[in-house]
Image 1: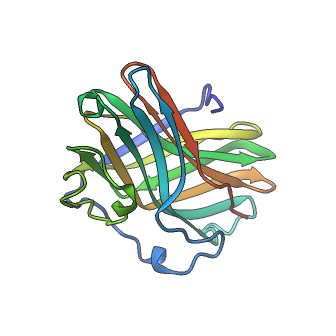
Image 2 (image 1 turned 120 degrees about the vertical axis):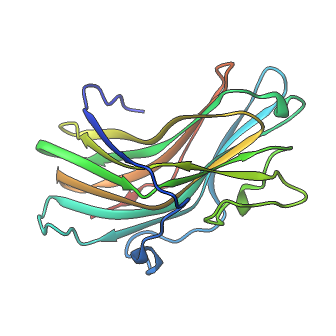
Length: 233
């Protein structure tokens, strides 16, 4: 991933009592990209003890809408989807402190001085697997309240709503983490992105977004997966 360097990040955190807040526009047909179901992309590695560590993304939906400010160098979008980690093998239940990071890579030819991307997340649902892994094809339940007899029991967790304001680099690719180093114990975890709103201002030329997810175990094994790039204008 491209290093964000000196990019400044400003957070405004607002605790909410609702696990996932929906936005009505996300129910519309997407104007850019193709709706997907289940697992869209995945990557895995086998560690030294024979455990398979897999990172997945699925149900990816990007809804591109006309920017409210009406400026030609502005782009506005909404994002739905999930990302998860699934660990299987002889020591899967013993894993501690695995970290999950989810975010976007934003690509563009050039940007104006002061160009930024602002992300508004209405709250992210986080689920932790407590048995022998989870079938991430089931994760699209927005409440993340699964309890299937042949999969892991999941417990919902609240990640507060937030606003991230990040400077764009002069040109190329800017990496924007939405959820960074979320730690969990056990064989599986998943996070639901529901109603994430993004606004990019000051980017000149075609703007492309690519979601990514990365897991790092306590022993340093790292797995990353990238989604399909989506044109935003």
